[in-house]
Image 1: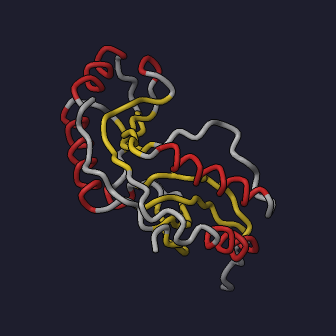
Image 2 (image 1 turned 90 degrees about the vertical axis):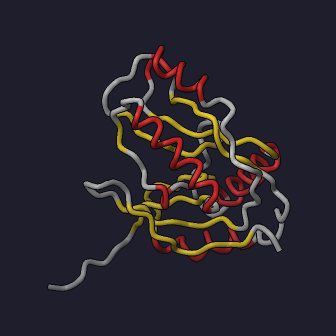
Image 3 (image 1 turned 180 degrees about the vertical axis):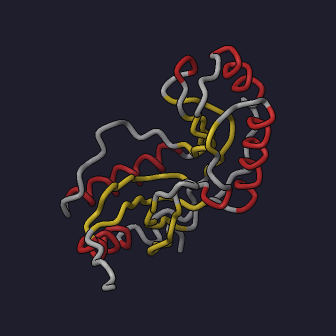
Length: 194
């Protein structure tokens, strides 16, 4: 049987997280499970900070996307961020996603996001329609959780933050959906530092 030619991939651009940050988020995820939250749980090795979700992307655009990403090489060597705390999308009384927040030089992070989004628009990738909200997904809720429970959890972990980290690269990932969750495959990356 001939192999099917793939025209599109589901893709996103993200900042990978260092091991110590993933460890803290894994602990936070464990505590949420222990609190009885019924959810699907991303594997810790898949934790990332999304800069741009591309969705279905023509394979023919990949070389152009890599060129755009390479324009940022070495431009953010001292971008200091921290991950932690806890939040819910869209809000605590209708939460579908639990996430860890990002703090630190978030203005510079947003500047990177805006420049990347604008550069990708110039090669035909649609611009982001909602505001940039940097976060790391910890859980996708399957059974509704009371807003009181979530507010207590958010309060309990409000001061749990990682040490500052300095992202060394941004990467383009292919995301393949499966019954066991999304599988992320690294396609290429660009160094943010020198």
